[in-house]
Amino acid sequence: MRRIVLSIIVLTIAWATIIAQSDDVALGKKYWDEELYSKALPHLQRATAAGDIDSKVRLAYMIFTMQVPEYSMDQQKAIQMLDECIAAGSAFAMERKGWCVIAMSPDTREDKLRGVELFEQASALGYGPATARLRALYSQGLKSPAKGNVYIEPNDSLAMHYTRLAYEQGDLDGIAYIGYYIFEGTHGYNKDEDAGSALLIKACDMNEKLFAGNCPEPAYCLVNYYKAHGNAPRAASLNKWLKKFYPTRY
Image 1 (cartoon, rainbow, N blue to C red):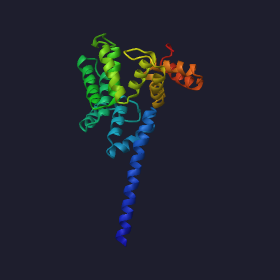
Image 2 (cartoon, rainbow, N blue to C red):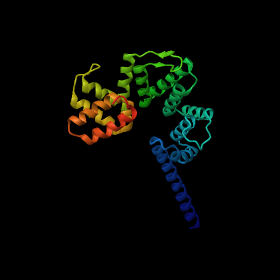
Image 3 (cartoon, rainbow, N blue to C red):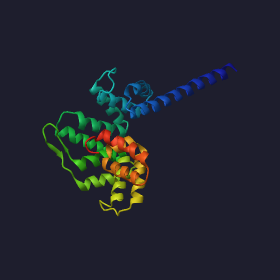
Image 4 (tube, one colour):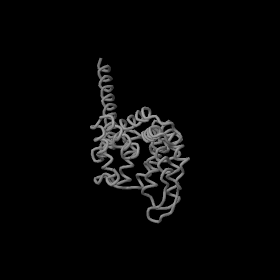
């Protein structure tokens, strides 16, 4: 009987530990998505210690970008953590390291193209956010803000390829831009406002803030659609984000 009781206690403790770890993963992600990095920190630390790869990626990104003043800011350690996650097969880590390399590394062609390679690797694994970054790079091009060196020329064909691929992978940006093209009848799509608006709304509902920040043209199109169809509250909510991200444009 004593052995049975001890087994029940051990199982109860183990189950409680699993639940606590699950809560840390969920809360770490929630606060990270909301950019409440100090609140995310303890949850991400515990989840990382418990072996959760995505939490480790988020923690590494926070360290690299110096988002948490109370945490030791060691960018080399952050890159090492991302590399460990990449070695474990994390496409999320590939995309985050690619962003860090392009946005914050020394301004050299080698560094920038290494970031693009990481996006390509993550995209090949089906990770939509990395594919969306490639869409943006080939839509706008990539050059040095300091030296003016051009690393990637705008390429409409590749931009469209990655837009379609991001859509197929269920990425918000891909859904938004394909919806926009269908709504407007551009980029080889027949004009269909019903089908286009349905995709725009789907993308907006996935994350209104990211939709406005990453996809300003589709977002502005949806603002006007909402206004034309008597949905002033949704138009105002979305337009608030557009004005926040693009104060002189919208």
